[in-house]
Length: 384
Ligand code: PMP
Ligand code: GLU
Image 1 (cartoon, rainbow, N blue to C red):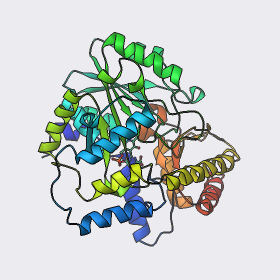
Image 2 (cartoon, protein in one colour; image 1 turned 30 degrees about the vertical axis):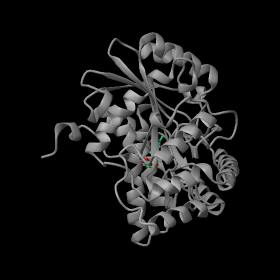
Image 3 (cartoon, helix red, strand yellow; image 1 turned 60 degrees about the horizontal axis):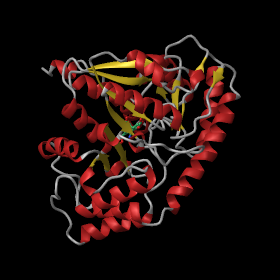
């Protein structure tokens, strides 16, 4: 029998839909998928070449658990340059981003602790909070506020049990970006209330308007912030399972303890390739973001032509989060689109109670599939 802890946690809604899509594809159903949150581009050639070189050089054994020193240094340099967070290699733990989140929950949360989360939010935040025995506290956000939390909304959700605030900008599933003034207000609140922040910045480079701001860059915030990022989205490297945590040295030591008891270290031969990703030419990354911007505009134009659909214009990530007028649950809507239109999206409810009445569409898909898939959505919605 599985533990009560696991029994209380639902399966990942994003991964469940992705698994269903691959099963249907294997059965020969021709599905257009807007479900999985991953770039549809190939990993840039210079990064793949660096990986092959390291394999051929025999770099195939365990590495130091926190990552090879040169990669930790390259990540610290990138973090100082791009995120304006003052840090050194000692403030870096190399680990898959999702695993970093999991370890953070185990390292910092106890039963009784409360963790504040935006609603809607990416599926795994609530799951890891529950697995650690702590209590997720959702802050419902509004379509009209571009699904962003304000410092006041967070302050209203705080109690004397609040241990941590989880932030994600640009956001999965809404694509919204938190702006400097809002983040500054939240930073002041967390300092005042002595709350730890987990800032998931994995979409930091996929941004179309404005700037990406790291909350750890504000005065005094580094000491209380655990910043996550990684290669998956920026360099189309989801399958490589390589990301990192930036934190004060004592926190890196705490989380690394869990790393030594779980995966030991990240895959060895991908680590030199990660150095190439960070220090090598950045042209492919910039091209990819420009391509995503075009697709966002195309997908948004096509979707908002559909009667009964409303959608914000997200400033980042590669997701649209449209609202539909039909009075059916987002699970039923997803199944309707899957069966009638052979189009896969992710139900809004998977991302929290405020996601009901919405679905998530990942536009990391070809223009051709965007045109055909949204056309199918339009035709099948007219039948409801
Ligand atoms: N954070 C967010 C917001 C995500 O969408 C994802 C999805 N991949 C992750 C973390 C996990 O990233 P990775 O797959 O690189 O571990
Ligand atoms: N983050 C991606 C998504 O939201 C991949 C699946 C997952 O890790 O949840 O679709």
